[in-house]
Length: 87
Image (cartoon, rainbow, N blue to C red; front, side, top):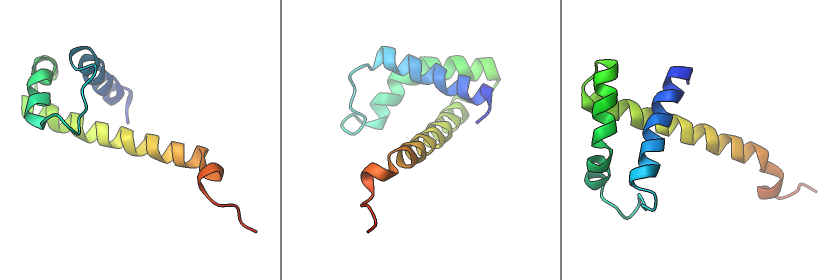
């Protein structure tokens, strides 16, 4: 992930934390989440001269990449704690 990608993702995540601080993504419909994020998605679309839909797709791709990287780092860091010891 480039520095620009990280800034892009962080911008949306920080905005989401402000407008949806206690939201459970598993319980709130995606359409409702998108409606809350629309202002920042539109702002980034104008800034980067992209369609709002493309901004959302980029956000989802970057968020997935970030989640996978974080998950891999945690698995590696806590491998001894989650794996049974070999005899």
